[in-house]
Structures are given as structure tokens and as C-alpha cells.
Image 1 (cartoon, rainbow, N blue to C red):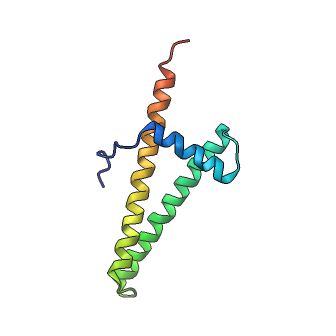
Image 2 (tube, rainbow, N blue to C red):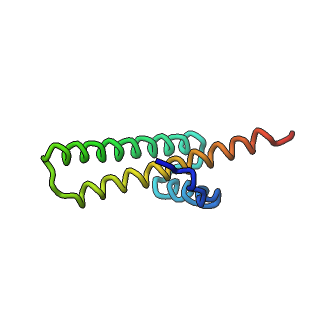
Image 3 (spheres, rainbow, N blue to C red):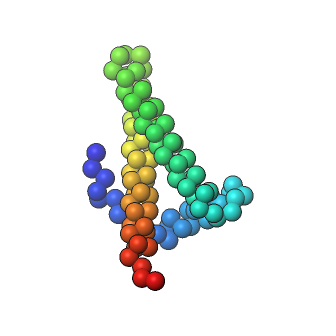
Length: 103
């Protein structure tokens, strides 16, 4: 899967997303909470990938016949993976920018 063309996620969008998560969960904006939300994102993406793979196997074995449900599971997994990769790329970009700062 090629996700190299995914570049439309801006740092402002990610900042707003983190602030919204903090407001909804009633948490402060500490690094620990941001890191935990990133881990949760990875776990959710992994769950969606596993569910899509399971749906493909069920369809291939003939246990499931609804192609719409299969395609929906595949698309959810694909979108979650692209979003996760975009977040990872932005975090790495921010890390590199911080490392290049002069004191």
C-alpha cells in the first residue's frame, strides 16, 4: 500500500486534535497523555487491520457473502493506517525540527 502521497495533515490540525482529545477526556496536556493517545491510535489501527484481515478470510472461506461489509472493513483499516502514518510522519518532522534548534 502506497501512503507516500498523504501530505495534507498540517501541524495545526494535529494540535487541534490533541486539544480536542484533552477537552473530551478531561485530561491535562502533559506529554504522558499525548503519548498515551498515540499508543491508543496504534492499537485502534491494529484492531481495524486485524478485523479487515479476518473479514477477508471469512469471505474467502465462504462464511461471509456480503461484499459491502468486507469493503467497508478494508476501507476503515486503510484510512486508519494512512492517518497513523501521517501522524507518525508529523511527529518525526517535529522531532527533527526540535533537534535542529539552537540553544
